[in-house]
Length: 522
Image (cartoon, rainbow, N blue to C red; front, side):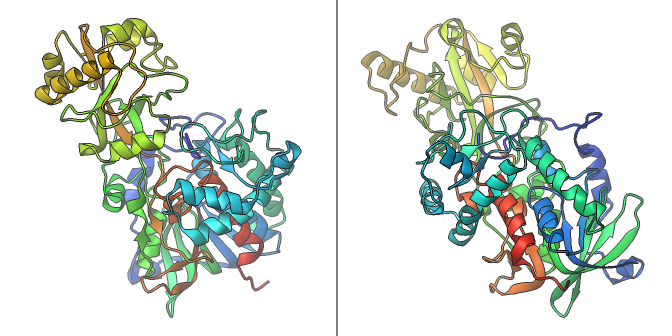
């Protein structure tokens, strides 16, 4: 899995870790606020007496480095964070990064350059990533990664690597903390932010929502915030930076911009699209949703979509060859199940009705396959007991009966299994599959319904190569910038999953904005 892979599929707060990410609590509060308050509400807002060089909306991957490096230039920075603690998606992220020309690579004799990194991204994304933003990212990622390492980041002993289950890089540049994931990055950011807070260069408002932008003469000159007690405050600033995440936890926005249903409820609860709404209200627009690239194999808890994730069926044939087949609702296969790239499977899933697939197998697989599902959360007995008891687990003595139970077309499934068994006997599969250890012929027969799933937004606010929010005519909105997932993961990954190209660019864009791209009055 790449970049911000979900470590905890159902986020919750613990006594000593993470923000209050209770989705129910947040959505109840968000329902009472409206982006774009109107003149009458704005008139009742109090004025913040400070004049800020930079107002950052969202204290996560991009917002925190922007605040740190701007403050080091003696800028006065205000960070507005909706959650009870800064960190954003780093609380759920594996923190996977990719960077070229790093000290780590050089120490291991690995020769790499930003140009090679750029070429890889454009190859993997098939030219669909944003060339200008990718160039900025790959040129700056090495310095960002080195800064983190110099500040104590410890990555896996075998890192950097080429990649895992998605398309690999041509050079080993993929690395992350295998012990702490995204929290390792957050610890470094917090440690570097605190001295700037102590010096008075940075002020952080948590449990505070940004509900409107202040505009004068077509320029953005401030932000209206709403505190936990409902108090509205006007904050004025020279530069306004939106780094408040995407819309992946807002099912309506996700479907509107990405064109697919949001099945899973396992993303950061504060990714509600507030930054997108603020930018649109100021004249910006959203693009990139067409670059949506799903993940596959999500087994959900219930049919009440979006549902929390129960388990993931995403085996990699290099370590666990397939015994089962995957079919769509018409009972038809759509990919070779032993293909070594998850990208190929995800492309296939995207073309299926409803972006869903049924995993179909028989008693022979139950007895002989290494495992059908990961046993990380469930024992084998638990797993076998789910069939015909859980919404997405089905079992029957006949193929036709299995099809009827699972909602798959009986005729299509029977024909597909017959064709697969014929190919298995001859060694010539219609999809080119090589690993076919046994026919699907011994009842009872089994099926598990899986869904496509996402933990980030591919679409986002349109920006130029200076990270300025732009209008449809490409002109920048003065004073308004955006970075991180709010500009859309598709900008730096295209229609693909490029290892480390969400977390690292977000950090890099924030660092560059704070250190040199923004102009301050101080």
